[in-house]
Image 1 (cartoon, helix red, strand yellow):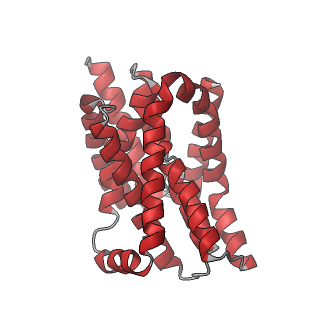
Image 2 (cartoon, helix red, strand yellow):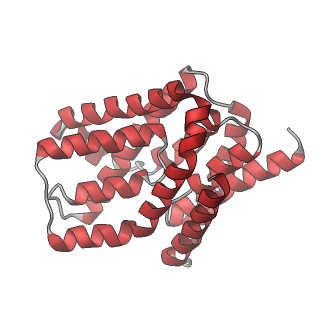
Length: 246
């Protein structure tokens, strides 16, 4: 790899890690950068998932008690979520680059709109007190996990919105459970991508190094940067990417 490629991938990881630490949306930087350096769409998606996975895992540090409670309290729904995540990752591998390339603009548009509307959607659901039963919740979680394994951008927003309508109004706990489920989905997807030979490890390492540095910087800037402004900038980037890939 030449210096331009190294700088692009490391810079994309840096921005992605910084944004994930403050408002989310890191995939909007890492996935397009991997496409830009010439990786096929499926490989770019798998490589991006692997590169940002440690950030998801790091979010669970110190949350072992909630993790154990979640696994013990709802083993059936966790199993459904895990299987659906695996199915989504497997679907990405078998769908091929041609189909995934056609879906990229639509996936980015969906993720952008979801990212833009996420806070308002969660507030609206919380105010209305909307709830769904356990069976419907498990089915909905399966659909979300399938999407998470296949593409994953905006997964946290989807999960938080879904958890809001399951009846639990403890926002702090919901955020931890969201992180647990997101980490589960990405961990399973990463394993499948790795064993499926879909990961470009060199680019993944560069993006990961940038994302690690960005996470540290973002953690220090989190109280100084308004998440709303960063979210607006990421939404604008998402719309530009949709226009570019359409």
